[in-house]
Image 1 (tube, rainbow, N blue to C red):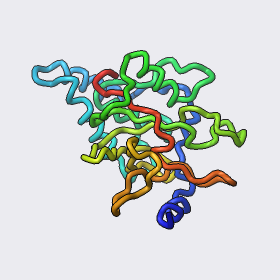
Image 2: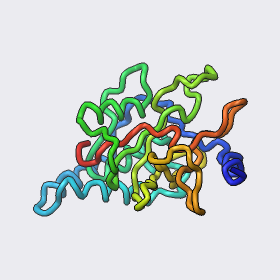
Image 3: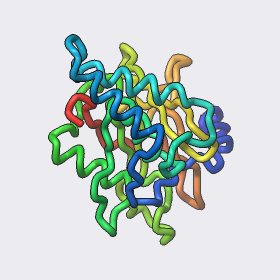
Image 4: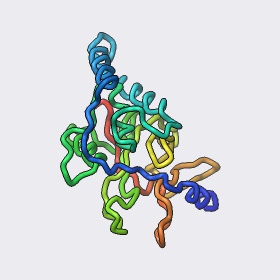
Length: 218
């Protein structure tokens, strides 16, 4: 628990800021890259099953960056959109006025039958709820607020994912099988995702986990 509280203090402003819902279509270099990939996936031997690996590599390549190098919001939704541009996919389509980008992406994934709660594959989207007080009313009523990209899955079920938080793009872990376990046997199962606020304790990734979306269906 001491380690957990120390990590909570370090978390600081590490919260997703997906406040923008308006889609910004890829332009310039992003559009050219999209056309190139769309042509490539039509080539013999290149299947949709490989897309997840490309998506994860693109996201991992941005770890440590504080600014996403593309014309997208510099937040968690922007990161996953840029990662999926690498396979010619735009995740954000016709967002509704009342929803944020994460909710719009989840809604599209659900409509495509991509949402699931089984073992994730590399490149799958991973969703979280209530990671910050989006509407500023001091209540936990904000719904879906954060999204990342699955990079790997350990034998014990711990998922490493790449996401954009306050300081920049980073890796974190979540284990939905043990959602309230911070660490066990010297291994971290769930990282902190929401810092302590007032009487509210810090929240782990497992506490706020919602589900996945299959990269093969997006």
